Image (cartoon, rainbow, N blue to C red; front, top):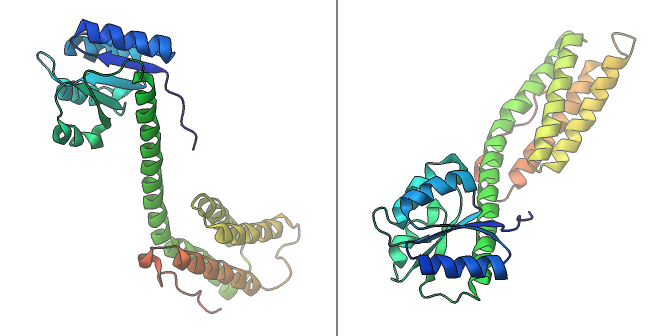
Length: 260
């Protein structure tokens, strides 16, 4: 997943010399758009309008300190997840580590090397990109596990429609329902990287669509043939779900299709 470039940086520090040096280094050497603030109150207003990609934030400031500013930023929609790099003359690794889950990327010790500042912030920006990918992967895997847990019910709905056709004969409404169920499964299983299930459901959907498009009704052949195709989709779903690494809960939950 490509990570967009770092462009806008907000620097917050009560020392005007720090602001001047940091701003010069970041604009002239890094080519960034930089805005500076000398107080926590000014910073909270600035984040609303500036929309920084990253905030370079002093820890020790009069009034509201850097941790307080971070808390205030998280209450503003525009900066609810904006990454922060703290700058401080005092090592406070424990307090800073406690804010890692709030978007703190790390700390730069004062006095810092102005020439190296752009490269340091780029390193932090890359770290931010890696964390975003890791978060996305965790969230995706959580959704994927939920989908696996729902597969038995999705397969059962298809099997129920197919079994009713096999028992009662051709019924256009039930065939249309089966087409819709196959269509949804083909799309959703593909999104969750169940390629074989997506192909199997797509093939079933195409067959059902051809039956519905045929001017002759009822179609030739037995609906039991359609039920057997649904069984095949169920077997594919069970096999792929059980093959998913680490998903023990999925094993055995998608049972075989009922006999018709």
